[in-house]
Length: 155
Image 1 (tube, rainbow, N blue to C red):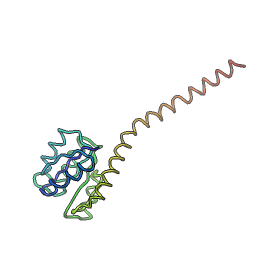
Image 2: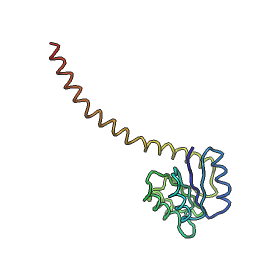
Image 3: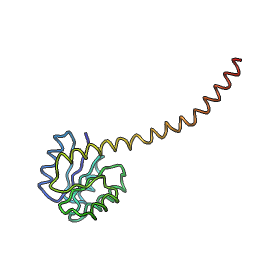
Image 4: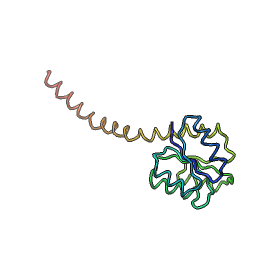
């Protein structure tokens, strides 16, 4: 289960998308613009943000920037009714996880959320794996030294 914030100025998105995501087992929060979305983001420990690109008061790109200042590990998917190659490239370069065109294909959205959650888990595991690697690198010479000492003692 993921905690997902949906930020969009279209009321039908705010009414239908949370129902779908809740049926998939996620907990959802909604906001009608970027400022409201940022407020909700600061109040909750979220895994995902699904946001429109063009909104009043604060657009999706500015929201992404503010979110990344607070938490680089949150996955952000952009939704847009005005797709362009430039906006897609800009979104991805700015750190968005993905970019989808409205009307949203729900199967595609579900797949992207699942992959994003897997990626988030992998990112969480990296520090542990790095620590294990360092532990092995430090302990191997010690074990070799201990082995040499023990073999000399047994002779």
